[in-house]
Image (cartoon, rainbow, N blue to C red):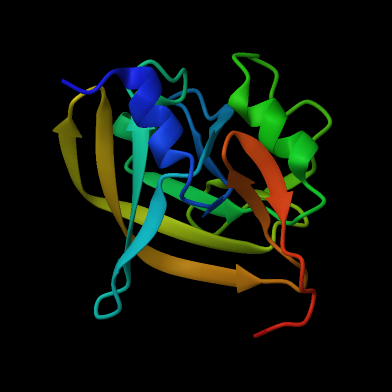
Length: 162
């Protein structure tokens, strides 16, 4: 059996972008979490997946609401990533956002945003894999915030498409 710490260290060698998953709970309060486990699944139809730890305080709302947003963070949004990675119950205090077409929070200044409807959920280990059909998207200019070997990182080359 592979030890969890060793497995985490090995996986840390894969550079990932940083997202904040957002939704609203049953009382319409915004909730969210930082996630790097995000990828595309299909172009036709447009599907993505996200993996959410069952211990996350946002997990029940994501499971019950059936709708969520993926906010892909810009290089200058490390503080937002850290805030949403915390266990604070006031993650949205002072964070500018608006509700999208699906009624899910969209973080201002995110590099890209995808509004999704859950089409399936798969429990695997201590996470649930949510597959979402993308209903709306938005793009802005900028560079992505990355995570590599346990640290935040940025692209060295600032030219788009390089």
